[in-house]
Length: 195
Image 1: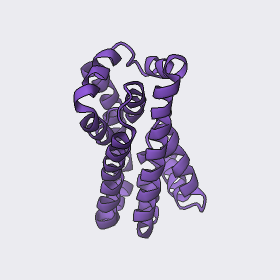
Image 2: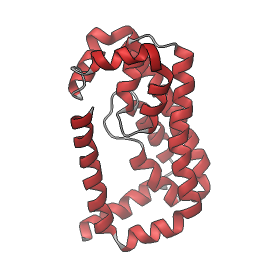
Image 3: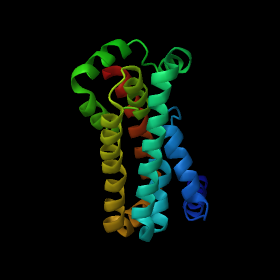
Image 4: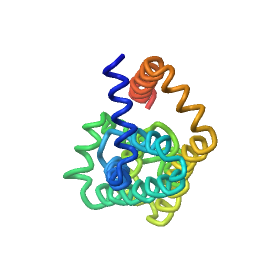
């Protein structure tokens, strides 16, 4: 428990660090094209550490995520054979990609939006959008709406309900950490089974 409490306290202190927004931007950018850890892991403690910055942090995360999505689109569009296919294989989606790519002809904007707000790895959506040559502006607009929905939704919840959520987490840190890990690994397992 002391280790967990120390890790929590360290995360909260790092979230309040002056350079934390720059690191948040970097993580949100690379997560949208190849990095496996979502920016939520940083965004949530950063808002909890400084609720008055919630809107600014949501903006940073949204902009970085969309720009990273554009990088993922470029990977799919220009580098699919050399980089894009390898990334899809790395995340275990190469076999299902042909079926997935076919859906883009009919439902491109909706796929980007739904993929951008769901637990489905957004990087797969960005690469697939480039490979299938989904209209760039449709992709960008759907990405802005999807990622903005997620990150501003988190900001709204934590801005209005942050203090009680923080108290709850701090009083039940072991339970929250265990639940988070179960949901995280359960989500990855569900994605592997159902997608």
